[in-house]
Length: 217
Image (tube, rainbow, N blue to C red; front, side):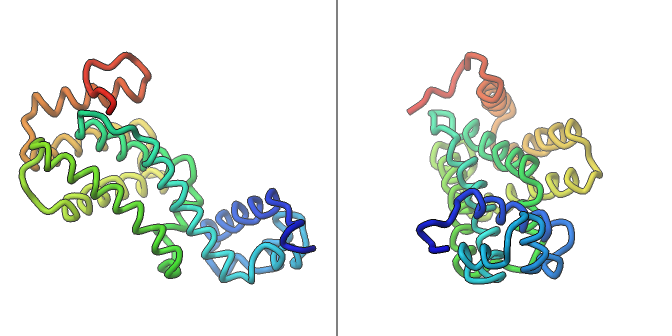
């Protein structure tokens, strides 16, 4: 089978199966034979799409961060940067809960390859840019955008991890996410009334209801 005739459906199935095996059994559980058996294909098919198991593992990590990037990138930029930032956090949260195996591979396995790390850093850059808009608009006090972004990343990551571990149900996870965002953003210098308006706008955008602010640009 040549690369030209390789079935993209098989490639997708291999990536999904590898993510599931790594997430549930760790990297040692994702072997060439086990992966082929999971997908119902041959080991030669794996070599058709990938150079070997190391490339498979790298591709799973790249795909995981690519999905996260697409979720975050789908958030529209409006004249309410705080609402936009809240929705980026929500995109992160929903991506993780919709793709739990991919999420576990991203953050609960060994460090990614250089190529996968480049994709991963791109998602952090998206978050930093959103935080910087909040600082530049005056919504947040002047500060170091990467530091603020790291704090936000740690917040959402922690709650996602608790939910995926079964220690928080979905309702508690979301409620605690909103409550902690309130505390953190007030700590960044945002007045509570302005914060509540931005949270309301973000909520309306998630639900699809007509928003009272946050015009697109």
